[in-house]
Every structure is written in C-alpha cells, then in structure tokens.
Length: 168
Length: 168
DNA sequence: CTTGGAATGTCAACAAAGCTGACATATTAT
DNA sequence: ATAATATGTCAGCTTTGTTGACATTCCAAG
Image 1 (cartoon, helix red, strand yellow):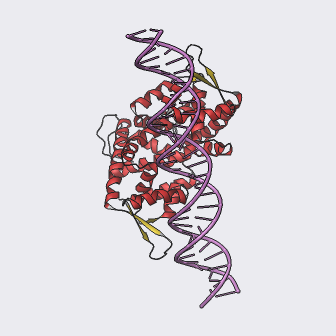
Image 2 (cartoon, helix red, strand yellow):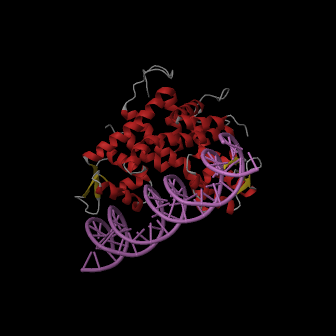
C-alpha cells in the first residue's frame, strides 16, 4: 500500500483515493464491533449495557472522580449517566460519597464487587486487543495509535492525553 | 514505543503491558467518537441517526442488495433494520423493489435524493479520515488497517474482505 | 450577613434504535 | 398438495441517549 509515495512526514501531500478512505471507514466500523463484542457478552449476562461498562472503566481509571468530570469524559448528558450510575450504586458496584470540600459533588469509587466486574470486562477486552497487537506487530501498533489520535476531536484528545500519562 | 522489542513478525511473543493495551482501548473509544461526529451532526439536522447512515452506506456500496443481506452485514435484527428502512423508503431516499426471481426478497437502491445524502455524509467522514491519514502518514495507515483487521470477528472479517475488493 | 445567581446532581418524560415474538407471503421439498 | 423453510412486516419491550424542571450547595455582590 502507498508505494511510491513519500515517507510519512505528517506534512506531505499524500494522494488518498476515495477508495482507500472508504476501506479505512469500513475497517473502523467493523473493527469496533469486535472491540465491544466480548465485554458486551459478559454485560448481557448481568443485564448491563455498554454504558455501564464505560462508567466502570473510567471510575476505575480515576477513583474518586465526580459525576461532572465523568460526564465530560464520556460525552453524554448527566441525566443519561445518572440512570446508569444509579443502577450501579443500587447494585453495590459503585460507591458514591458526598464531597468533603464541596458538598454538591459526589465522589465515585468501585466497590470490591465493582472492581471484580471491571477486571472481568477489561481482561476480556484486553485479550482481544493483545492478540490483534501480536498479529499486527509493534510497528503496526504505533501506526494504529497515531491514526486514532489524529482522528479524535481536539477536546476529546485532551481527555485522552490526560488519561494517558497516569501509571496504575 | 516498543523500543527494544523484536520487529513485527506476526508471530513474535511481544510483551504487552496492561498499560499499553489500556491506552489502545481508550484510543479506540475516543477515536470512534470523532469518527462518527461529523456524519452525526448532518444526520441530526435531518432527524436521522447512525442507523440510517449505516443502511445508506451499504446500500450505496451494494446497490440491489436484499434486506437479508444487509442484515448480516450490519449485524442487527431484521426488525431493527426494518424500522430504519421504512423511514428511508417513506422519505424517498431508498427504493425497494420486489424480487423478480424470488418475490419474497426486496432489492434496495438509493434514489437520487438518497444518493445526495450519501455523498454529503461520506464526504464529511472522508474529510476527517483523510486529514488523520495525512497527519499520520502512509506507514501508520498501513498499521492502522492491520490492527483493525486483526480485531474483527472471523465472520465480520469475511464481510469486510468481500467489500474490499470491489472497485467503484 | 443575606440574597441572588451559578454549579452540581436527581427525577420525569420522551425519542432512537436495539431486541423478541407473532405473523403474512412466497418458495422449496416431500 | 401440503408441510417446512425463508423473507420481510407489525407490535411491543428495553437500553440509553435527549430536554425540562427542580433541590441543594456554594460563592460573590451588595
């Protein structure tokens, strides 16, 4: 692919046919199905959905985060997130505590049960990601990440970058 | 990234930390938002959703396709697709004709109006894909595609491959 | 200090798009 | 000819997005 074109510079005027771009678009569409397939199966058993997975994922990543902060990461309305959080709290997967400094805020943490589900979900998702990475090799992986990052909205990329630099 | 690891072979036992995999997972999540953002805006104006976009895209790709075939590509139930198709047909964007050989089948085509919306949507989506591709360069693009393909389910990849080899 | 506006989160009701079940029509096989 | 299969449609439920109304808390202006 792309033989005879200048090497990647981030600035070169590449010729990109509609056909090449269409393939990328379809690859993205089909791959995203695979990306979510394994967690979706686990969630369905427990009558949860993708929205619950996303909440659990980012609460795990940023323990003690507020509803408002989670909102801006997830890019949904607070009313929509609230429904999902409510079920997770009622089911004892997430703990919500009133803010000490600002009592309007609720700080969110995973309970041991919530953390267990988080592990189950991310193990499943990582397994697929790992085998895709292994099949494609490290050079491809670097390219994969570069293209994805370039595809994000400016604001979204800031969230992404902020998450990125945090060791566990 | 991945310094000191063997070059990509597709077989090597790469060390992939949970951290590296998590970044890939989050990149995929955030990038998919960007991927759909532009068409979503156009669709919202016209009171359509992503489901309409997907139907229009694949009818454009495979004119004359049947409902059943579209179903297996999209991976949804026929009842779900039917609702979307109904509105597109009623609004005059899609033409449905009874099968000549098999009268149970409906063959689907875009009308001129439907084709116009298809162009508007795919132009928007291609613009973003093009600028991401340009920013990342051809080597990265090749890697991007490799990883996405490796991430698909077996069956999905067959659909993808079948689509791939068709010139416009 | 108090009071009015902004920020945070919750509750209610609605819309889009997934799902299963029931069914009509057309085809194929027995 | 008739039973079984395949295709597509209709009805109703669930998940998860949306907007609107509201209670609580905080903070800044007077």
